[in-house]
Length: 413
Image (tube, rainbow, N blue to C red):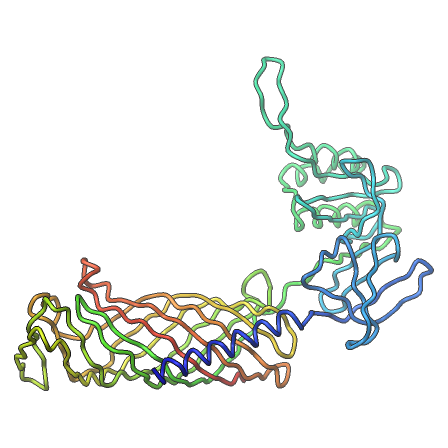
């Protein structure tokens, strides 16, 4: 019970830290606001947990008072790190027109903007045509023959009409999709070919280089096994290992990382608990098999497994913010390979295997808390839960299953 209580306390501590961090920490990034009088205010802008198309939450100092701006109250705001730029613009909507914060994608003789509510909106603005929305809501129309069908998207026709002075772009327009990459590409090419008097500026976030981090870690795991009708008590065992993390691999997002590594764990002594219907067991000690009779009043036997395993996880982690102290979660697959063991066991009623499985596979989930020491170095703690089993047996009931909860701490170089 003391061991279980220890793990419960670790879980409670991490959950408390997660709750406090998520509720107390608001992610503000360096940026600036341009007022309606064209004054530039440098400071910090909230980037997460806020609808940037609806409001701008700004403060001059990192610990200062937050001031909230709505569209029309400021000219624009921009983030320094990724270059994202939002401007107040009067844009056409389903109800006429409205002043919104639009994300500025391309600036030039033809400028492209983006806005999102319950759908994606793309706007193209030129001096001749003004602000034109390229996107449209799906609508069902009735043809002359009475058949109902979705109205075809007509953004390609709008683009060709606006860019009629550059017919060389028409094949590219026909092949395009209403997406950030295609709209930015077409608008930039149009400006480069036609609008030679004005420089074209793209505010698109650049792809970040893939980053590798190496960590060492160690801790303890509380686990128990189940095999047929045999189950063990829960025991604590040590584990140590190293981990490789790859950031910016998914959509150039540094908050989401791919992780793998190598961990060593040793399983020691366990008490085997048998179902009352199982009366005997073969117990291997060295090269000899000893026959043990389990009667109605004795359904337990002690076993020193001394099993050494190597664990190779394949995980995806997500950090909730880039703050100094940040929680994260992860999930993935755990591969467990048996290196050595000197004691085997199996029941006579279910004698499927006379050895500890050479390979277990399962799933793992984790909850962690990271503290940045420097931009490249950090310390962290994690609570993980793992369920794995032997897949060599077709009958899942006869597969050895491992249930494990672990607490580890680590250091990232």
